[in-house]
Length: 193
Image (tube, rainbow, N blue to C red):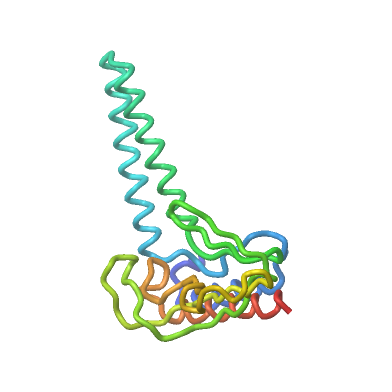
Protein backbone atom coordinates (compact mmCIF):
# COMPACT_ATOMS: atom_id res chain seq x y z
CA UNK A 1 0.00 0.00 0.00
CA UNK A 2 1.64 3.29 -1.07
CA UNK A 3 1.82 6.04 1.52
CA UNK A 4 2.22 9.27 -0.45
CA UNK A 5 2.52 11.42 2.65
CA UNK A 6 5.71 9.55 3.62
CA UNK A 7 7.50 9.66 0.28
CA UNK A 8 10.36 12.04 -0.37
CA UNK A 9 8.96 13.35 -3.66
CA UNK A 10 5.78 14.69 -2.04
CA UNK A 11 7.19 18.24 -1.75
CA UNK A 12 7.97 18.31 -5.48
CA UNK A 13 4.43 17.21 -6.31
CA UNK A 14 2.90 19.75 -3.92
CA UNK A 15 4.94 22.60 -5.46
CA UNK A 16 3.99 21.51 -8.98
CA UNK A 17 0.32 21.27 -8.00
CA UNK A 18 0.40 24.74 -6.42
CA UNK A 19 1.90 26.36 -9.52
CA UNK A 20 -0.61 24.67 -11.83
CA UNK A 21 -3.50 25.51 -9.52
CA UNK A 22 -2.64 29.21 -9.46
CA UNK A 23 -1.92 29.50 -13.15
CA UNK A 24 -5.14 27.78 -14.23
CA UNK A 25 -7.33 28.91 -11.33
CA UNK A 26 -10.58 30.80 -11.60
CA UNK A 27 -9.22 34.31 -11.47
CA UNK A 28 -12.43 35.79 -10.03
CA UNK A 29 -12.05 33.94 -6.71
CA UNK A 30 -9.93 35.35 -3.90
CA UNK A 31 -6.87 33.11 -3.42
CA UNK A 32 -3.88 33.18 -1.12
CA UNK A 33 -0.90 32.37 -3.39
CA UNK A 34 0.94 30.54 -0.61
CA UNK A 35 0.23 28.13 2.21
CA UNK A 36 -0.09 29.39 5.79
CA UNK A 37 3.15 28.88 7.65
CA UNK A 38 3.76 26.68 10.69
CA UNK A 39 3.80 29.59 13.14
CA UNK A 40 0.38 30.78 11.94
CA UNK A 41 -1.11 27.28 11.96
CA UNK A 42 0.40 26.53 15.38
CA UNK A 43 -0.97 29.77 16.83
CA UNK A 44 -4.41 28.99 15.43
CA UNK A 45 -4.27 25.48 16.86
CA UNK A 46 -3.34 26.79 20.31
CA UNK A 47 -6.20 29.30 20.19
CA UNK A 48 -8.65 26.56 19.21
CA UNK A 49 -7.34 24.39 22.04
CA UNK A 50 -7.89 27.27 24.46
CA UNK A 51 -11.40 27.76 23.06
CA UNK A 52 -12.22 24.10 23.67
CA UNK A 53 -11.19 24.45 27.33
CA UNK A 54 -13.23 27.65 27.70
CA UNK A 55 -16.32 26.06 26.10
CA UNK A 56 -15.94 22.97 28.27
CA UNK A 57 -15.74 25.16 31.35
CA UNK A 58 -18.90 26.96 30.15
CA UNK A 59 -20.63 23.58 30.02
CA UNK A 60 -19.48 22.71 33.53
CA UNK A 61 -20.62 26.11 34.82
CA UNK A 62 -24.02 25.68 33.12
CA UNK A 63 -24.45 22.22 34.68
CA UNK A 64 -23.60 23.73 38.06
CA UNK A 65 -26.58 26.06 37.66
CA UNK A 66 -25.06 29.48 36.95
CA UNK A 67 -26.43 30.26 33.49
CA UNK A 68 -25.32 33.93 33.24
CA UNK A 69 -21.73 32.97 34.06
CA UNK A 70 -21.90 30.09 31.57
CA UNK A 71 -23.17 32.48 28.88
CA UNK A 72 -20.27 34.86 29.50
CA UNK A 73 -17.79 31.97 29.38
CA UNK A 74 -19.36 30.60 26.16
CA UNK A 75 -19.20 34.08 24.63
CA UNK A 76 -15.49 34.26 25.45
CA UNK A 77 -15.00 30.84 23.84
CA UNK A 78 -16.76 31.96 20.65
CA UNK A 79 -14.63 35.12 20.61
CA UNK A 80 -11.45 33.03 20.83
CA UNK A 81 -12.69 30.85 17.92
CA UNK A 82 -13.34 33.94 15.79
CA UNK A 83 -9.85 35.22 16.65
CA UNK A 84 -8.31 31.86 15.60
CA UNK A 85 -10.16 31.90 12.27
CA UNK A 86 -9.05 35.49 11.59
CA UNK A 87 -5.47 34.52 12.44
CA UNK A 88 -5.59 31.65 9.94
CA UNK A 89 -7.15 33.83 7.21
CA UNK A 90 -4.61 36.65 7.65
CA UNK A 91 -2.32 37.26 4.70
CA UNK A 92 -2.35 38.52 1.13
CA UNK A 93 -5.12 37.40 -1.22
CA UNK A 94 -5.32 38.07 -4.97
CA UNK A 95 -8.00 37.84 -7.63
CA UNK A 96 -8.81 39.50 -10.92
CA UNK A 97 -10.52 42.25 -8.90
CA UNK A 98 -7.49 43.34 -6.91
CA UNK A 99 -5.21 42.66 -3.97
CA UNK A 100 -6.55 42.11 -0.46
CA UNK A 101 -4.47 42.28 2.71
CA UNK A 102 -6.28 40.56 5.57
CA UNK A 103 -5.01 41.28 9.04
CA UNK A 104 -6.10 40.14 12.46
CA UNK A 105 -8.52 43.02 12.99
CA UNK A 106 -9.00 44.65 9.58
CA UNK A 107 -8.93 43.86 5.88
CA UNK A 108 -7.86 46.28 3.16
CA UNK A 109 -8.68 45.76 -0.51
CA UNK A 110 -7.09 47.65 -3.42
CA UNK A 111 -8.33 47.30 -6.97
CA UNK A 112 -5.60 46.65 -9.53
CA UNK A 113 -5.81 50.19 -11.02
CA UNK A 114 -4.99 51.55 -7.53
CA UNK A 115 -1.86 49.38 -7.25
CA UNK A 116 1.28 51.14 -8.44
CA UNK A 117 4.36 48.97 -7.98
CA UNK A 118 4.85 45.74 -6.02
CA UNK A 119 8.47 44.75 -5.41
CA UNK A 120 10.74 42.92 -3.02
CA UNK A 121 13.19 45.08 -1.07
CA UNK A 122 15.91 44.46 1.52
CA UNK A 123 15.09 46.27 4.75
CA UNK A 124 14.70 45.80 8.49
CA UNK A 125 11.56 43.76 9.14
CA UNK A 126 9.67 42.73 12.25
CA UNK A 127 10.32 39.26 13.57
CA UNK A 128 6.91 37.48 13.89
CA UNK A 129 5.20 40.87 14.07
CA UNK A 130 6.95 41.78 17.34
CA UNK A 131 8.75 45.09 17.91
CA UNK A 132 12.16 43.44 17.40
CA UNK A 133 13.50 44.04 13.89
CA UNK A 134 15.99 42.00 11.91
CA UNK A 135 17.46 42.43 8.45
CA UNK A 136 15.32 40.68 5.88
CA UNK A 137 13.22 40.98 2.77
CA UNK A 138 9.79 42.53 2.44
CA UNK A 139 7.26 42.60 -0.37
CA UNK A 140 6.23 46.25 -0.56
CA UNK A 141 3.27 47.78 -2.38
CA UNK A 142 3.46 51.37 -3.58
CA UNK A 143 -0.07 52.58 -4.41
CA UNK A 144 -0.61 54.50 -7.64
CA UNK A 145 -0.96 58.25 -7.13
CA UNK A 146 -4.46 59.55 -7.81
CA UNK A 147 -4.84 62.68 -9.98
CA UNK A 148 -6.56 64.71 -7.25
CA UNK A 149 -4.07 64.21 -4.41
CA UNK A 150 -1.66 66.88 -5.62
CA UNK A 151 1.34 64.68 -4.91
CA UNK A 152 0.77 64.87 -1.17
CA UNK A 153 2.90 62.47 0.81
CA UNK A 154 6.07 60.69 -0.14
CA UNK A 155 6.57 57.13 -1.29
CA UNK A 156 7.83 56.22 2.18
CA UNK A 157 4.51 57.31 3.72
CA UNK A 158 2.34 55.59 1.12
CA UNK A 159 4.07 52.22 0.90
CA UNK A 160 2.45 49.19 2.46
CA UNK A 161 4.37 46.10 3.54
CA UNK A 162 2.48 43.03 2.33
CA UNK A 163 4.78 40.15 3.37
CA UNK A 164 8.13 39.67 5.03
CA UNK A 165 10.43 36.68 5.16
CA UNK A 166 10.25 36.80 8.98
CA UNK A 167 6.46 36.77 9.46
CA UNK A 168 4.35 33.84 10.70
CA UNK A 169 4.03 32.35 7.21
CA UNK A 170 7.64 32.40 6.04
CA UNK A 171 9.99 32.39 9.07
CA UNK A 172 11.42 28.92 8.42
CA UNK A 173 10.61 28.92 4.67
CA UNK A 174 12.65 31.46 2.72
CA UNK A 175 12.07 29.74 -0.68
CA UNK A 176 8.34 29.90 0.07
CA UNK A 177 8.60 33.66 0.57
CA UNK A 178 10.47 34.11 -2.70
CA UNK A 179 7.92 32.01 -4.58
CA UNK A 180 4.95 33.88 -3.02
CA UNK A 181 6.55 37.27 -3.73
CA UNK A 182 7.15 36.29 -7.35
CA UNK A 183 3.54 35.14 -7.76
CA UNK A 184 2.10 38.32 -6.22
CA UNK A 185 4.42 40.53 -8.28
CA UNK A 186 3.39 38.70 -11.45
CA UNK A 187 -0.33 39.04 -10.60
CA UNK A 188 0.20 42.76 -10.04
CA UNK A 189 2.14 43.23 -13.29
CA UNK A 190 -0.37 41.17 -15.28
CA UNK A 191 -3.54 42.70 -13.79
CA UNK A 192 -2.40 46.33 -13.63
CA UNK A 193 -1.48 46.48 -17.28
